[in-house]
Amino acid sequence: MSAVAAPARTPGELTPAPLNRPRRRWTRFILPMYTIAMIVYLASPIFVMILYSFNDVPLDRQNAHFWGFTTDWWKNILGIPGLGDAFKNSLRIAPISAAIATALGALFGLALGRYRFRGLRLVDFVIFLAIAVPEIVLGSSLLSMFVLAGVPLGLTTIILSHIGFSIAFVAVTVRARVQGLDRNLEDAAQDLFASPIAAFFKVTLPLIAPALLAGFLLAFVLSLDDFVITNFVAGPKTTFPLWVYGAQKIGFPPTVNVMGTILFTAGVMAAAVSVLAQRRRSSL
Amino acid sequence: MRRKLVPYYLLSPGGLFLLVFFLIPLGIMVYTSLESGGLLSGGFRFSWAFENYTNVLGQYRVQFVRSLVYSIIVTVVALLLAYPMTYWIAFYGGKWKTSLLLLILVPFFVSFVIRTIQWKFILGDFGPILGPLKNIGLLPDSFRILATPFAVVAGITYNFLPFTALPLYVALERIDERLIEAAKDLYASRWEAFRRVVWPLSLPGVFAAFLLTFVPATGDYVNASLLGGPGTTMIGNIIQVKFLTELDYPEAAALSVILMVVMLLLATVYARILGTEDVQRAAGATA
Image (cartoon, rainbow over all chains, first blue to last red; front, side, top):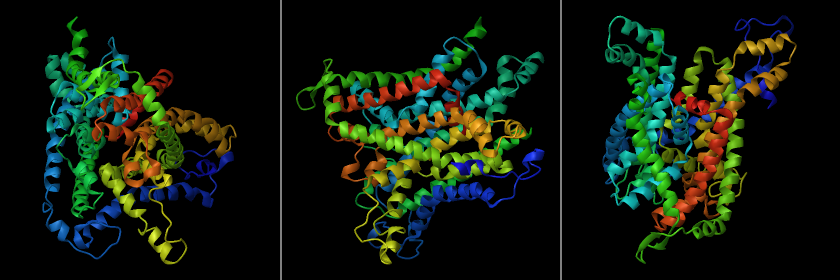
């Protein structure tokens, strides 16, 4: 742990105390090098995934040996029976559940961030629980309910479950933004004879729009990525993660790597857009 | 008077949804865990069957203990790995703070299952790490990482690291740098300034990280199933098999309820002492 306290500050960043001049020692490189190493470590499976999407494997089964370079898997993305459908299911579920979760979660976030009311602490604790609950507990309890109620499992149960676990994340995202807002803006609008509803749509909504976008993207990624809960409530349906999990025992084609790479790229681009949107808002 | 009702109007659609698809299911799972009977012998009936709990606790004690031990190791290792990194980003990241944080989170845009499978390839018996070492004779051909507790713990640590890093970062980032300055003006060494100022102020983040890593790690079964072997089965694997393969709902539910109670206890104690804000802030920081 001693490395933690070791870095020297660059002069000028803060006014240095006279008796504690930043020493230029080699130890100041430890933490930045460590951070870079951690970033590489965290990204290593992604490098492997992308590289192996070009793996020229025999027999359509991905393995740890890199046989040679081919773009065949990229040219024939929907060529694997079953996988294409699973992928499409995932892309069908994510936008619906993300949209509904964003709408419900945003109202939640507004209420929590703006108002003081009876029961606030209880609602707050429920949101906290929904974030901290282990996925397996949520998945198995949803399955218990669907079984008891005799609800047939399928896309609907998947979508309902995904909305359920996304609401809390959207709510805390929106709440953080609402708390950072200047309440005076809305009051000013109302002083200028805007109705509360008009003030909301003309002033508050545009201001929290970046948080809505961020919340939507978060819910979208959570839905696309989810395996554990989906596995419990999917019944006969498969999604992309479910298909991959099922196929990995006998081996899966590198097409899986291709799809993973596409989703990854799309996710990175969406995150970049979201960050830029928030930058623009904060510079206003 | 109407204004007072506004927050309730805002809460009601989402609240209703959370009630039906979060709180009620938890209650129904408790109900299911007290049923008895079998699918083939006329279905399950509610009968206050508390023996389900004593049965599973007796039968799966090994897996419970193993899950807890793995999860504790994972949490400690993840905290040790993430703390120096988030510390550096929070205090020295400057204008690159957000970008660095994003770089840490970006790998997790790839599905959990796919990420874990890539580790299966990386750590494979003749994969990119072990293959070369075996070729030059540094390791015997029979040496394995997969199917060992190490592989499972390493996999869980990797997969839950963002849950550790985010609360830590959020806590560290809020620390006023002038406090460290003040400590140094009072002749504290760097180490003392860290130990007496930064560390205590970051403790809420450490506890939030502990909660958000330890709780889901205990219930994880994907890593044990993809990277582990017969000797690394966790309680999550048992729950999953009982629910989805054996269709033994009451015992599966009993196992899950036990996990839920542990989680509720930890979460309640945590929320009582430290409030719910840090965990929520960390969850919000992802967006």
